[in-house]
Structure formats: C-alpha cells, structure tokens
Image (cartoon, rainbow, N blue to C red):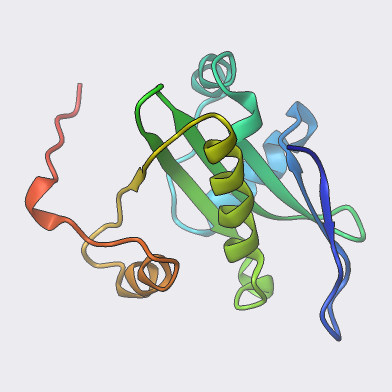
Length: 147
C-alpha cells in the first residue's frame, strides 16, 4: 500500500493515487459539492480517519490538482465505499476505476472479504459504472434509518 503513479494515456497528465492528507480537504469538499454529494464535516472525517486513514484516497493530476477522491472504510467484517467523486472535466478517463481498484487492493490487504456500497435508485449511470466493475445490485437487502 503506497503511492501509485500511473503512466498517462496519450493526452493525459500523470495521475498519482495516494492517501488523503488534511491539505486535500478543501479539494475533496469541492469535488463532493460539484458532484451533488453531501460534504463530510471535518469532525466526522477526523473520527473516521482514526480507524482506517489508508482507505481515503485521492487522485492527483501531474499539476497537483485534486481530480478524484474515494472514501472507504472497513469494520473488520465488510468494506464499504462511502464516497466517490471525480472532477467533471476529467470523467471517463479511468480515474474512478483506478481509485476503486487501489481501494479494493488496500481492503484485500486488510483481509476484507467483501465490499458494499449504496447507489441511489435514480443514479442510472452510477449503477452502470459499479456493475461494470463487478458490483451486483441487491435491492432486496437495503434498509436504512437516519439517526
């Protein structure tokens, strides 16, 4: 588990997948907001990062710009992918796929046997993306309760 630098495809800058640092917080917030996601408050993220900080990854372009983020967690039994966002101008370049692949490798290294995530029913493109990566919909087991 470490920093991965991937060779760029023609026309792309080098992309580096690495563990989140607090200096990345504002960039992650901007990506979440641009994607229409709720922002994780700093205090909530601090609590999450005390358990498995290596499961919050960022994709950094060659110029240092944050172009993608994925937030995962592992409870000792199952892994969860909580947030994935890629800069709209950089979508369809494999960034999300590479972020998820690195997160999956890190989860495997922790002994995680299965990964779960939630896709909102109206997010057809998101569902297609996850299915292309091998994630299977399980609509009959979804339960939620806000606290």
